[in-house]
Length: 110
Length: 114
Image (cartoon, rainbow over all chains, first blue to last red; front, side, top):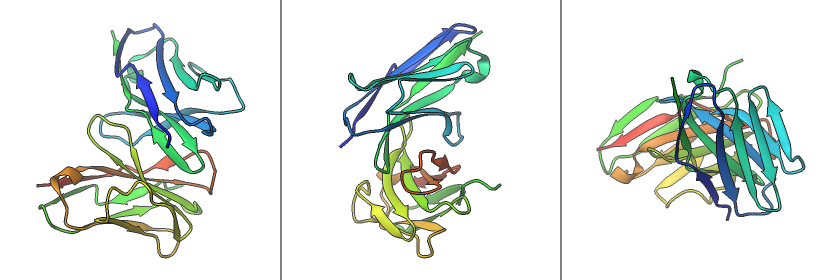
């Protein structure tokens, strides 16, 4: 089955700098890759997603890139702000099953 | 409109007891998913319903876990003979239909087995 690896597990960046979180997946048939943000005690919220027929997608300060050949995808957050502090999960979907990574705890330092 | 809701928000039970967790998906969403999230981990897939039927239950850890969705809307996750290792947040999500991309999560039920 699908296996999703996510790195790093913890990331601290200075406010205003960029943050990058990387994920790899194992099943080449996976075709949809969402990213979720989860604040403490809250539900996961979808922040951006990308389909396998697209290499890059951007939404304001957030962008995601996908390399199907290498089976890896990344989340980029620019001009980080305090409210970006949270746990971020990447995921990969094949058919209707979504497999999540273990998460990255992002700390934005003042 | 209303999002996915789950009840109860918290459940504390004793080892060996039976528990039921309820999920109300977004109205009109035919696909419903259950996940389990342990501390410091990502959501772990348990089971997926399309309509009333369980299309994929490969994530259920053992036969103590069972889920139903008799009318294709509300779903109940049932855990028999609970064990301390079952303690986790149980998340429900729904999406518009099969192979529809966005899954919307509920707030979860925090289950604690003493």
